[in-house]
Image (cartoon, rainbow, N blue to C red):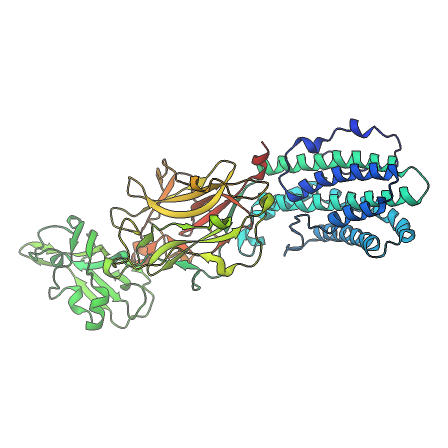
Amino acid sequence: MRRLCHFILCIFVVLPIDTIESTSDKVLHVTLVDQLTKDYLEAEKNLWEVIERREDSTLQQIYNIHTDFLKRHYGESNVLLNDVHMNNNNLKLLNNIITINETSHDIAREFFEHRNYTVLSMKAFDGINLDKTFQSVCEQTINSTDFWNNLKNSTQDCQLQSRSVQSEYQVLFEYYKDIQAAALRTYITAQLSYMILHLHESGDFRNQSLIYEQHFRQTNAEIRNVFKGKLQQANRVVWTCDPLDYSAPGVSYQITNFLQGYIDAEVNLNAEGSCALTCADYQNTKHFTCNSDTLCAGLRPENRSMIGCKGRVRGCHGLDDSISVCPAEGNVGGRYKYVKSNTGLKLGNATTTCTNELEANAWVRWFVKCSNCFCLCDDIMNSDRYFSLREVVSNIEKNQIVTGVALTKRNGVVQFVIAQRQLFAFGNVDRSHIEYAWSLAEQFVPKSNESQEGIDYFTLTYENRSLNLDTITASAGSVVTGVRFNRNGKGHLILEVRFTEFDAFTGKLINLESSAWISNPDGGKHRINTDNLDIPTKANGPSMVKSKENDYIRFGPTHKKVDLSQATVPFIDGQKVEAKMPLSGVGLYYKSHGFIAPKIILYNFEASTE
C-alpha cells in the first residue's frame, strides 16, 4: 500500500495557496471531524490574512478562533479506549493518540490561560514536531496490512466479543473518526505554533505553514479515500453471540405446548372406540375417552390432567406393540421422560430414573389390532403461541430513532423491544446509558376484551406456523424508526420495518408523515429443516448463522428420538442487539442450534456522499 501521512516540513518551495488542489473539499462531509476540518481550513486562511496585515486585534483573533476549535469535541469514538482485547500494537497506537491530545492541550493551555508568548515560542516547536507522532499513527493503521487484517478478523469472531459481533463497518467508521480527529488536532496545534513563531520569531514561517497545509489537505483526502474503499466493502451487520447460558432468565424464550409429542391408544382417538383403522389415519382428531387397559388408564390421577391432551391430536403414526413409558412428574415442561420396547426402540432419555414406569400393549379385538399411536397434541388452552402484531416505534416527533432490537415474551406473547436514542448531526446519537429506554408496545392479554386476533396478535396453528427470515433495508436517506410483525397472504409471519427520511448532516428527521412500513414481498421461498433438533439449550459449541435471504422456518416439535417431541423449536433468542449508530435495516435469522434472533444493519454514511 502506498505510504500516507508524510508531511515533509523541511521543504521551502511553496505553491500559491489558490493553486493548491483541495481534494477533500470535493467530497461531502459525513462526520463532525470532516466538517470541522473544512471549517478550520477556512478560518485559518482568514487568520493568516489578518496576521499579514498586523492588525491590532491579531492575537485576540488567533485566541478566539483556536479557543473555539481546540476546546471542541471532534466526534471521536475513542474506539481504542473501549477495546477490551488490547494488543501491543493497539497499545502503542493509543499512546500516540494520547500524546497528540496531551501535547495539543498543553500548548492550548499555555496560550489560553497564560498567554506567555516567550514560553509559547519554545513550545511551538513541540507543536510542529507533533506531526512525527501522527506519522506513527498512520504507520500503525493506514499503512499497516496487519491492522486491516486484524480488524476484519476480530469483528466477526464471537470468541473476541463479549455480547455481540461488532460489524466491520462500525469499527472502521470509528477508527476513521479517531484518526481524522488526531490529524486535525495535530494540524491545528502546528498551525497555531506557526502563527506564534511568525509573530515573535525571525523567519518566514508562513511559507512552512503553506507547505504543511498542502500536505495536510492531500493526506486528509487520501486517508478518507482509503477508508471509503474499505467501508464500501465492509460488513454492516450486527448480531448477538451465544450467551454463557441460554437457560438463564430472559436470555431465551419458548413457544409452549404447541404440537407436543403425545402417546395414546387408537381406540381412544375416535368416537366409536373402534380399532378398524391404523394410527396413520388419525391426522386431525382428539382424545375421546380413556378405555381400560390403555396407557392413560394407568396414569396416576395427578398426572392425567398434565399428560392427557385436551386439544387437537395431529399427525399420528404407529409405535411398537409392547412399549414401556415413563411419565414425567411435576412441572418439567413435558409429558414423558422416555419410551422403550423389547425390540430396541428407545425414545427420549432411557437412562433416567423412573418411579412409575407403565406398560402399554397392543391387543387384538375381533381380528383387528388396537395399536399404540405416537401423535402431536395441539393444546391451545395452555400454550404460549402468540406473536404481537402491534408496532413498536421510536418517538420521531422528538427526533428519536431505533438503534437496537430484541425479542421478548410477555403474557405468552412474543414481541419486539427497541432501543431508541435521539439523533444528532453527522449521524451521532445520544450515547448515554439507556437501559430504561428499551421500549415495548402497550401490553395486552390474548383472547381478552382488550385484544383482537389478527389485529393485535397472531396465533400459531398447525396450518399456519411459518416465520419468514427476512432482512429489510431502505435506500440511502432513511433510517429505522419502528418494527413489527405482520402476516402475509400465505399465512406466514413476516417482519416489517418503518423508515423515516433524515438529513445526514443536521441529523433532523424529515417528512415524518411519509414514514413508510416496508417488508419483503418475495420472502418465504425456502424452508429450513428443523425436524431433527434436540432442545436448543442443550447444544454444545458455538452456533452458526444458517439462514439466507428468502428462507423461512416452521415452528414444530423437537425430534422424537432425542426428546420425544416434547418442546417446540426454534427457540427465541432474547438477547439485545444494539449499535449506537443509525440503522438502515433490521432482519431475522436462524442459528444452527435452533434459535431465531434479530440482527441490525448499520446506516451506510458513505452512500450519503454518492
